[in-house]
Image 1 (cartoon, rainbow, N blue to C red):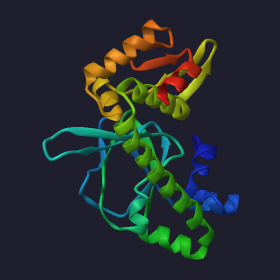
Image 2 (image 1 turned 90 degrees about the horizontal axis):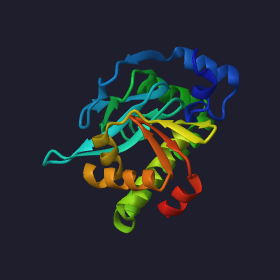
Image 3 (image 1 turned 45 degrees about the vertical axis):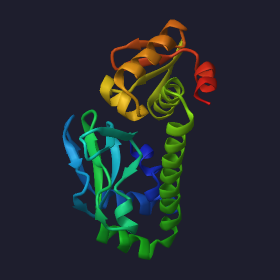
Image 4 (image 1 turned 180 degrees about the vertical axis):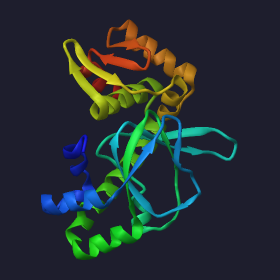
Length: 226
């Protein structure tokens, strides 16, 4: 399987023997999701856990007045839908393919059966949920205490950590987000986010090329994000 080592690093497979992890992986159902297609919608009932094997998936929510907020962009080796393991019910976000994506699907019943026979799996899964809660708390704090340029810098660093590739003059980040989606991720208007990006470009902290960014001055972005 493409990216097998990356996928096996997901919390679902932590704490179990490699051969058993591969057996679980082989029992999962492959899913292909073309760019722009929805995997599941906010409010819909669902009890499957998914592990991304390729591409990118965005998680978003829509307010009652129609405004959209982008919660996260996930890539290979990351999970989504794991809340259904501990709290089956309506989905808390809509999952949409940012690029052509491939995933592995594991139904709730099969997952609970696996945890019953491999209880060590529950610890890293709970760790993954705790990490997601921590990120949510940090995002809320950023909205209250950080200005938009600071939030933009932090978002760029997070995207670089997830999807960045070292190049001669910095870190190349092919995020594949539209300007509107990037603004939703930061929690600000597109105009304000574009102004911050233009400022970072003028300062030569970043270089822009469509939906690809080169982070040229990571240290300065880190200081600006605090």
